[in-house]
Image (tube, rainbow, N blue to C red; front, side):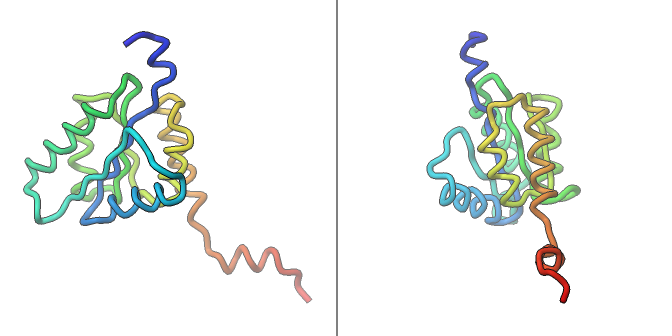
Length: 145
């Protein structure tokens, strides 16, 4: 791949989570942003044995890496989807960010032309900023009488 092509390539995105959470997040993101490319969701549950899930992750990482790497978003640190994804750190150009939520996924797709490490940091920050106690925010906007 030429430098010019790599400079314009987007980071591939995999959402890996328990049951159908990953597919639902991806569908919801497409509802908001429109059709998306170079991405997939991988469900990890009792319907698939571990080796099959690892193979699906490996195949997706190979397919989605267009020279700029792949960001893997997982549901929780210590969970099976994360643990299986972490195994790819030694064999692929991937970064894994855990605790996936909708603000993270939207940020990932809207900023995916930046370098992989920087994208992972921005996605992590977006996820944290997306977690709020609504009552506290509303109290700050309502003047005390």
